[in-house]
Length: 150
Image (cartoon, rainbow, N blue to C red; front, side, top):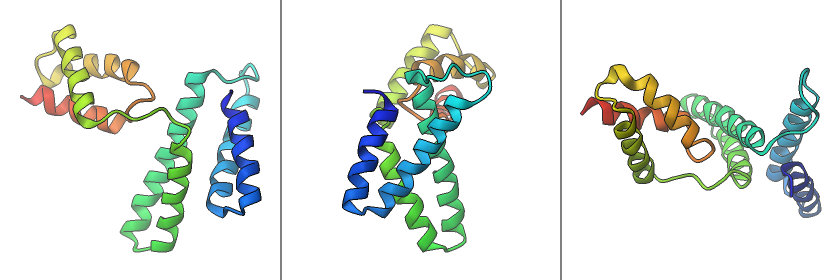
């Protein structure tokens, strides 16, 4: 089932349950999908990898907002962002643990022959392709820096 159909089914369930947090989140995802499908140069359909990128972008936006709200001691707004993150993450593939990410990146470093932080670009390119949808870029970057600094 395509992401859009899953979102619509969840939206109906949330409406019946009067779940405000889920409704807010699902409507935001639906709007983002519609924007992506009708964007100039798009084919009108989203591929699965595009759907995952879209969801990751939405989660990242909410995490950034959450961080700002926590810094400003706005617990009410931070709570809303956390609720939306939880709903959107249900549609993303399972994220890898830190140990699994380290293991994969260590393999990539060995394959590319990277030995210093100057080789970070080479490793990041391969790592982001291989870990697309399974880990966020910030985590990948931190692990690559850590492993290349050794």
